[in-house]
Length: 155
Image 1 (tube, rainbow, N blue to C red):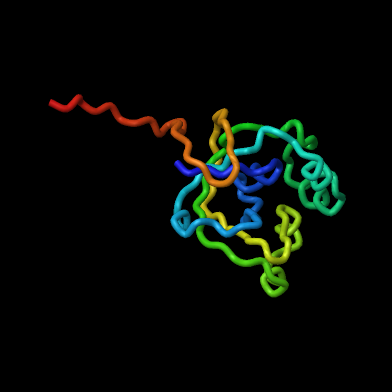
Image 2: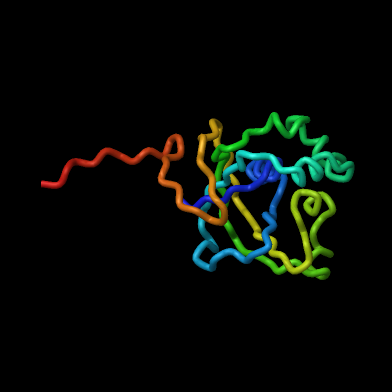
């Protein structure tokens, strides 16, 4: 399964259906459009994450969701769920006119970047520890409840 690592709280917001766009400085590979991808939370916390999390404009929306009040209390270094990469858009002033203020708080909507539209998120009941990587990477693990069926050995 293809997986993308996302900083918290953005990964949690995506798998819980509060966030639609994952923002990146690069466009996704065309081969990933329409693909169900794993959504992993990064293991480490960076100063810019903390600053964004503590920003009053972000907190005005986030605090109403009933999610953990501290960034440290979210899962870090876990596969949280999956979502389908439906499409992507170049972030322009015109594009931002149609993006809600709340959604804009849930990402880095820098002009010239890309907004990846993620649809049909499914949150895992029990997140799976995962070793992340930059970009899109292949994960060979199994999602709970999706184990391979046993097949008879070839004759």
